[in-house]
Amino acid sequence: MLYDDAVPTRLAIGADHRGTEAAVRLADRLRAEHYDVVLELPAAGQACDYPDAAYSVGTAVAGGRADLGILICGTGVGMSMAANKIKGVRAALVHDEITAELSRSHTNANIICLSADLLGIRLIEKIVDLWLKTAFEGGRHVRRIAKIEAIEQGRDPRGLSNGG
Image (cartoon, rainbow, N blue to C red; front, side, top):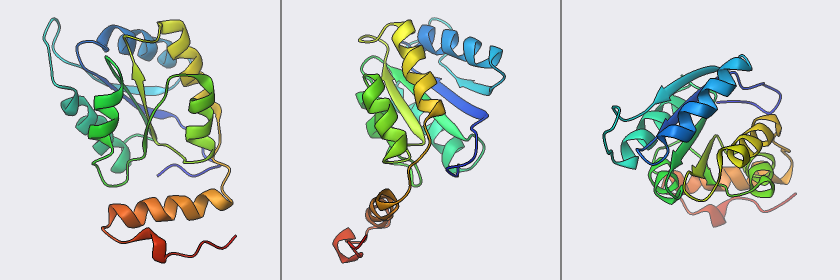
């Protein structure tokens, strides 16, 4: 798990056939910025199901093999839904810089899900840059993440303290 003061260096990036081009371009750019990037992509010219990439990236992040993950499909919705089924993953569907920043600062999202169809590569790059540079605020947000983790374990979050 990435802690608030740690700088992410290991990134897992996955895409389905609709997000492959954006994922490759983003990975090349991030590697040039000295990130260690692992790509999970369909075979060239092959259609694929987004849950496959979501599982690969999600398990890499949850298992500590990657600090953070980036998933790109047509809308980002399917990737987000699939990735969030993995224990330890907090995948955020992001469409702009505001939601990118808040997904890290408030919910400490460890995976970002993006739309290849709705966002151009320049906006994807801006969103990812901001997301990678944004630190988790902690404070009252720690309590809320604990409640998310309680739900993940099948427990009622309402039993946890709301103080602070």
